[in-house]
Image (cartoon, rainbow, N blue to C red; front, top):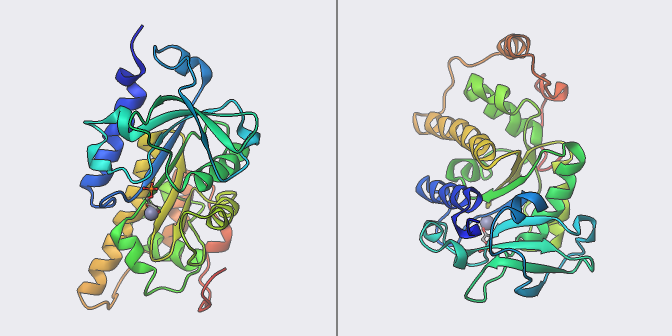
Length: 281
Ligand code: 13P
Ligand code: ZN
């Protein structure tokens, strides 16, 4: 039986966090990722059958009792995950009592799950209700998207339409748009609750002046989602660097053509422009 350390889950997680680091979205210990695994997937590997220790968490996650998550550790650097996977990540099982998790593998120097774990678990709950295939929550600090939160009104519609206009792939990859919450203190249950509420409608939630929370079925798909959002944010930023004057762009008719061609389940509210100037919707 292969040891869990050598599993495809640990390898894919390390590869993903390394990519996030290489993209420049996860400086120092910035960012965190959680991947839900099934009992059968975990049991197919050796070294996951004993509770190593119990770790208290600041959120009652009993709704997820028995579920397994491979999660990055608090304070750990994404660039190191490939070399030290069983130190910088952990496999945990949510316990029946809710406010604690059972450590089954990893965190071998006494580490603990990310400080954003309550926000991850609340987001997992929200996404699971939408689609039982959703397994991944990813938080990172994509530079251009974060920069836009200083210059564009904090409105989900304004952000979604601006990004859709930057590249035809955008509306194809995130037809529901992206959600924006107000600035809030990270590492708190409050920001987790606000994020999870937006996750009922969107797979991407922007944390102004900080980063993004994204959800998906797989690590690759979630990474690709953030990559597409950030690519459009980079185009927007580059336009500003070129002077900011837009002479031509994707039109609302172009959106309608994309919706028809790719049979998109689009957010209709975002198809027409409005005069949003308020800070948060
Ligand atoms: P952690 O090191 O606790 O995962 O925190 C990183 C981060 O990006 C907080 O928002
Ligand atoms: Zn962060």
